[in-house]
Image 1 (cartoon, rainbow, N blue to C red):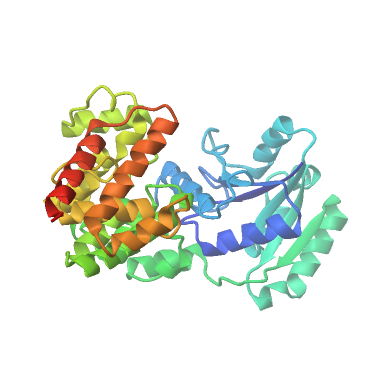
Image 2: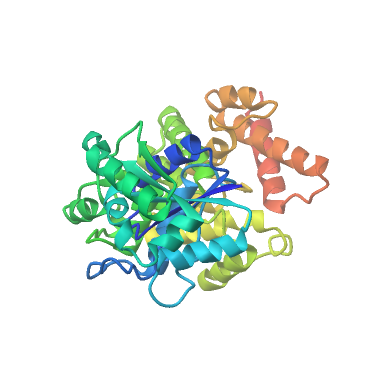
Length: 402
């Protein structure tokens, strides 16, 4: 196995780090790559007011997840769980003990590469791992890097590699911190990392979470889910807005309901139940056993409590999984938008999409019936609210008939 180790303070992790990691994965033909944020970097003092080590690890995990390669790229708390200063030699010793047959590659920026010979135990570092540096700009790939590579090879027998990145994101974490404090620089961050920064008020970024613009609300939602879910969230948001326009609902409310509808989707059962207790959500017997039924309820409560959504948006999120009798227009729109947004792919979805713009009630009824049939096919119980929604919509339909 070829294992890449990408260390640093990641204060914050940004698109430059991700571009470098993705290039190294391909060019060095790595099997896996781990970001390893330093707890207490020995070579510099973190600026006053910096995020905690745990917050930097959280952001690195979100950044790594955004690459959508969970089996190959991840984050490690190796240095955070070790007391004292975060010496690279110690980290490599631990990784070598854990993966004795692995070929290790240590990745770093040009500044670090040019000073590697001054680090603690450089002979140990170069014995345990190859050293790869990223040329972030065209000028980075000049004579200094080549001279340093030759020096490391001659002095320590180092195996070195200088990667000229095919795509350059010319920003440093220091520059980015300054930009964020001025309200700039969001384009250099994965949306989930930007959302985490907003939620925790890091780097001088201060928003009223109950009055967030759409872009910032979208980023916060991304920071609460897995990256693989983002396409569905965006699809639901856009579909809800189109349906709101078609049926005369409030398009901005539909948008915000779509953005927030799955924010607690990935919480485990114990976390879901904790939120239920916090918000006084009473669960029936089926809900106490089926974690998939809880995120709509807990998500609605968090959306109202943290992000200040109105009661009708809260209600649309609350019922978007099961539906219910007497659904409002916004509740129907979110229910069916979630069901048939553009990334969904199942038999009958095209008919459902067409129907949603011809007869919304019939589309929601079809969605309920399809959901009921799917649960029956899988031998799983159907929630009573879905059955009541179906019966209510059937009754409405029969009353319309001449």
